[in-house]
Length: 451
Ligand SMILES: *[C@@H]1O[C@H](CO)[C@@H](O)[C@H](O)[C@H]1NC(C)=O
Ligand SMILES: *[C@@H]1O[C@H](CO)[C@@H](O)[C@H](O)[C@H]1NC(C)=O
Ligand SMILES: *[C@@H]1O[C@H](CO)[C@@H](O)[C@H](O)[C@H]1NC(C)=O
Image 1 (cartoon, rainbow, N blue to C red):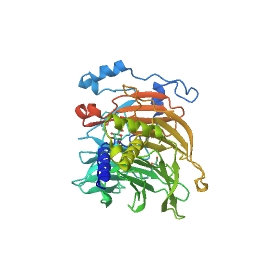
Image 2: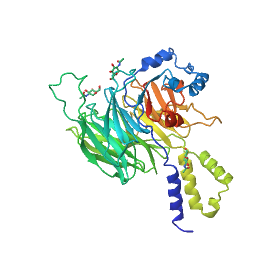
Image 3: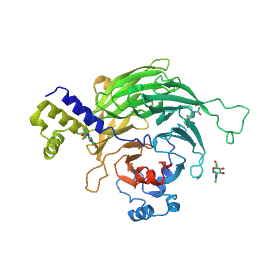
Image 4: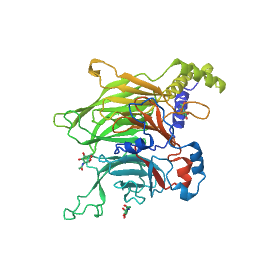
């Protein structure tokens, strides 16, 4: 048998899994609007954590809505649905709130980045600033910098991915009335091309580094669809470090809110964490391997299930070439245990991971890893979302509220709010965004949910 065959097969299989569009960074760093959730869920506090609350909208009501007229559709779909940002010409691949929570930037496949002012969240007509990307660039991800007005945009081009940093020109100081002043048009301050060779960028994550001697600059991680993650200085565009997850394929990368750690969710069950080391003068010195979260299932049961699956599919690769069969089994079992998304807690001492093994886990990452102490699992709960056949679904994105109490998670267009302490479902919004609904009916709008 040709020695190339395993590689070709591997490539084919890997090619098959690279089909997902991020509705990414959906709930990042926004101002807490927990009050509105509290209104819908008066019992939602730690004093009564075990009481599962009723969904705020009944399935009957949902059905009614999906058959309703267009006018009805413009009304709220869910008590927690605050508003819809209109004006997008295509699907939105990435979004990010500014650190002060007053702006939201979206990366749209129509080639435009829009910056929305969120001063009055219930106002139907949102003003937005329109930034047209250079020709041939499709924006896929965005991150705000520490001044709340500069952004880094990742774009997809024919030759790979590019990064652009846009900053506003200094406003005219004589123009005192900020509310009425037309915002000055942002300009490109730095740009990099083919940042991950030919690979696409899955997500950008920026945070203002305050750990230790860090100087408060925003550092931005760009996560390649392959196995690379690069760390950039937001303001000057300097490359601060490159790491390789060595896990076949990345899912996403994040940085702890204090800028100390960077972590990646990838194709296998283990989560790798790096430390971002700062010099005394506050700049990044290096990015070094720190810890690994081990505990999501990577078990023989899944390999056995994979063998059964292969047999029922009448694939007898095992008989043909043992090495190849082994490799495919490895890939399948890894795919069933992959960590799909993760986030750090607001005070950077814990992590939450969601895995295809059907569980969510909370980890204590505040350990003396220099002394080989491993992060411990503090809590674990089954993912409370199932398909019609009862199989557990996996989460695409997760985000923790600024007080660390509520976890927002998505699977496709389903949005759930969970109690971070117990994993209890606080609320569920189906067809919250995306899917056929947005594609056909509200293709040019984006539903905004703030928790
Ligand atoms: C941006 O927002 C953050 C968070 O509210 C704030 O601490 C910071 O001072 C703001 N930066 C500027 C330049 O306004
Ligand atoms: C909504 O926003 C528009 C444009 O920003 C403004 O003209 C209008 O007065 C606002 N409406 C309310 C009710 O605040
Ligand atoms: C991995 O799982 C996804 C669904 O979650 C599936 O579409 C894909 O084919 C799987 N890939 C491999 C290599 O098993």
